[in-house]
Image (cartoon, rainbow, N blue to C red):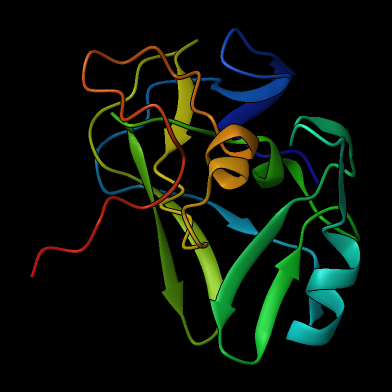
Length: 155
């Protein structure tokens, strides 16, 4: 089913992105992130990365994983929808919301037609050199952290 708020097309940030079809007021629930629900044991299997001796990534299976809770991750590559194409930004116009083990993308502010929809992935993985390369950010925002990884927690 076609979403009234967004369309997927080529992005300047990364690959395919999602763009507003019309004005989207702040607070609007734009889309639910759909896909196959999988347990942690399968996530690692589907997230394989091959690196060379220097740590450079040679091959990476493109994954659209969205962590819901300790027992469930949504794999948007299987039975997913266009929500899987929403790119990361360090200065996002959307946010992800988990309600009753479902994931929704909501507008943080008014979004104009043609504007790319983004949310901050805030990925939580061990911040190794390999992870920083793998999850490099290309959002171009003035406040870009240079990574899609979550900022360090304040103590």
